[in-house]
Length: 405
Image (cartoon, rainbow, N blue to C red; front, top):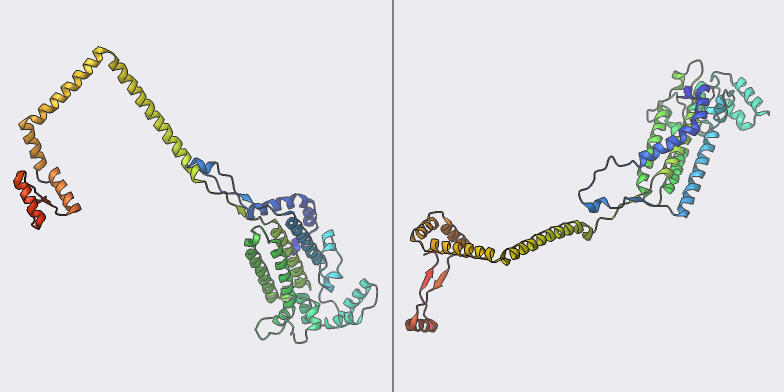
């Protein structure tokens, strides 16, 4: 990746295409964070068709200005940190070969780490235009061994000059991992940088339901810190170097961290707020279509009834039609009375009703299951019946007949 970025043609193409690619990237990120619903199905009820679409919460002017100021400040600090990498003699003394390499020393071709210490000190003094100071001479004297130079490239000048208990990457630490001592020495600075980035992202993700994105930002920062630790622990510059030219791990990770935090701040600024769901349809809107349909059907039935009434009145208006109607209903009533008085028809009906499993037996079973056995007192007519009633009222009980008898 570093070799590709160091290519002059690639850098020129990126500079030319940046005004076109950056807006495309912003729209792509916005579509990823707030995707559109996949297809739409028309609801069956008309009340759901006319529902207003869900709308996003709008930031207040004060919150919008605060978020804009915060993202501008955070991106400016991250870009300034990327443009001001940690001191690295093998990169700062190298000649830039392109415009981007002059802005970002990490993109330069580093010097050979096998250069003599005196040559490195003279080149450093020549680039400064003055003699080296005591701290600078102390750093140059510490870079006399290859292990010290590897530690300087992998962890920077701070642990090499200030950590008295750190062992070089060539020896194993107590944990059995190479360079663990130097990693612990730079851990506070890395933790402060991650916490600062998380604070900025948390402030940008405050208000209007953006808090749901904070967990993703924490996961991204923790993942980035884990990748950085893994890169430092698994880096072996002496094995990967060809011709004394190796990757400047500390400078590359510093640039990658600054760009990563810049991307996180921009994503936090572009994170969409929560949406207000459309209110559910009211009972009146749900019942209105059914009521209108029932009203239409009722009106149709009433129209038919009115038409039938008018038709009947029109028929009975004439004498001849009225006589025919009267004759028809008279003959129908006569036929019905004859059928009811015919003994043969009565026998057939009684046979049908008393057949096992017939209507009478079914009704009796239903009555028994519903009410149970019911006793009905039988009262006899005439004076005897009155005397029996008096006797029963005095304390006696009358004759009881079961419905099931």
